[in-house]
Length: 177
Image (cartoon, rainbow, N blue to C red; front, side):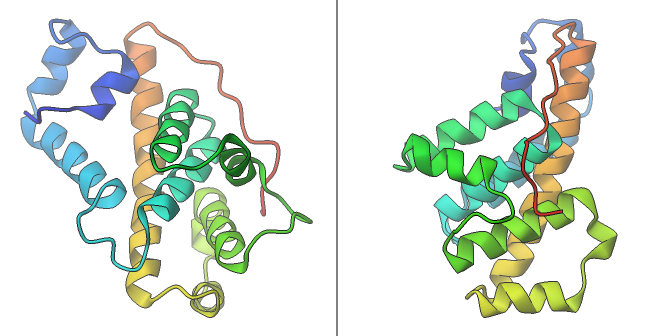
């Protein structure tokens, strides 16, 4: 088992609980989920996508999926990375008509697209990311990260329900979709 298990932390699963016992029956799943978090959110090789950008995309994904614990987690991650509250709010709340740097706006548009309508993504959307300065490798990393955080949001919300800790799901007021 990994030393840190972010899913257990966010779902508030006690180490000696029945729910922890169920999760621990599949240590490969627990290890791979944590390993994916480490590789996508806190990689040693940032592959043209900075730690701040990764946390911004993760926060935006969490806010679009309405997972309060994940939102708080990624807001804290951005604070760790030196982002101010107004900068963090901007990422979480941006929408049509907001003036943002091209790279950030392109990333948030892509995030919203993959969260709400992934099948609608086209080569044109990838071209927009490239025009904003993202390399092919960064586009792949960003897309993987968005898919992973979407999965994680469902996992955490579901495990919290099983754990008897329900959250009020609040969707972000703004979206590029």
